[in-house]
Length: 288
Length: 288
Image (cartoon, rainbow over all chains, first blue to last red; front, side):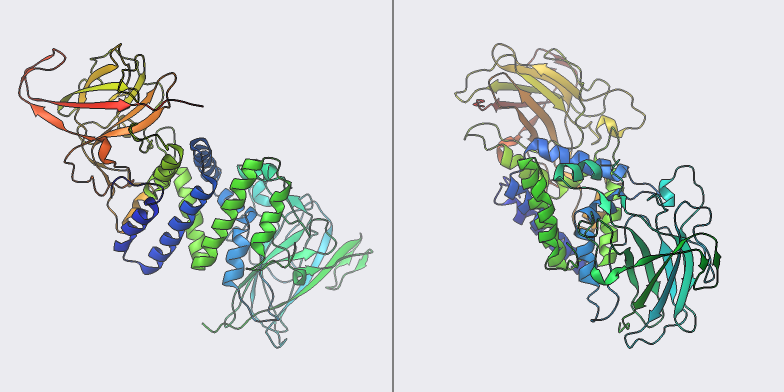
């Protein structure tokens, strides 16, 4: 293993993997080395470009903390996250489609009763979101866990607000015997993904905007069914056709309808106009 | 750009690059997206594996500081650095070959006169290194700058020693009218690359050892010639055939000869045995 050249280096690196004990790790590492080397050869990466790549990756890692995940953002904006999502969720026809997890999930959101408001005191249009969790035949799934997170009415997640110590616009609900769940929130708005890290200048150099169409994140799980991580998008959003992270699916879009002051579907009396939205989730059976 | 699937995602991401203004950036980004997506599809990366990759890259970035560059180490151990090196240094036959830059260079090493000792008080076998800087015809190159860095006799670079505030085993020399330069140092030893960051467990999973054969780093530059970043390796080292970063070339190996106490080539009187090594560097002309 000496005097390695452009044409012999890749095989030499692959040869060192022959002693790997983990077959799956070996498979991934081999493919990674092949594709990484092919990329470098294809573009004939210069030393300056290589060093810029080192600096970019380093800065991306250093931008991460307990509230910020810049590598997920990079994966999202390069379409890798949606590709991994597609490969891992080959659900049967009719099951709710999945989309990106995103970098803003936080574990430990409060468990709330149906009808609770996850956006008390938060700026934005009051919105009653109602949903049902159904199986592939359209029968209700009771006791499903529904994790919800979203931006406020100005496009910020709680973790992006430096002055905020508590969670907001996050909650966990459970479907009732009829598969129903409902909560009050604020209507989500489209927003730019964070551009103050390395991903921002990358998107700029690509000639791309950083916006995501308005959406609420959902993560659903129930015994006997495959878990689903997805969004519900707001119909009519101007960025539905140019999502910065490639996550939009038509089946996930629903109308957020503005209603005049009055009594909402759940019995809440609203003194101001408000918004109602509804979505039925269909879970695929877990055969694993 | 909605409802993207395993088969349509890559083209959708590539389509967003059409508005990029920088042709070279666009070329690199396109190739990166293609190869990255092909890799994910090839191995059908699971969500757990994707998340482990996110965590690995994040930890790699966070291990970096002003004295540690874990992404360079990753590039080195995956053979990427040597590939970039090979692509960028297609030197004419006879010119000194290049090898990895490595993660341990520090700018601002002291400028020293020939014969200076860069390892005063440093543990290791005292070594007189003599060299010449020549052009392609074998004629001396005067006034070349020679940057030198290496480990101590126990295999540590100065930046790895927490108790050390100053540089050691680093220096900059200039070739004299006959192209000669010389300095005292300690004989380098083989050493493991740092394994306390994410690269360590990666090598372990690959079934690889982390050792590099003993070497001294050199970076040479002179007006009218192409700069060279390379090593001189110690003949007989047990890791010459399994360098963890794939950097060994036969033309860069020289004998480090142990001499009895006496007068060294440069006139220094040595009361103990010492080591002598010599290497002639040949620079390629710069036609740019």
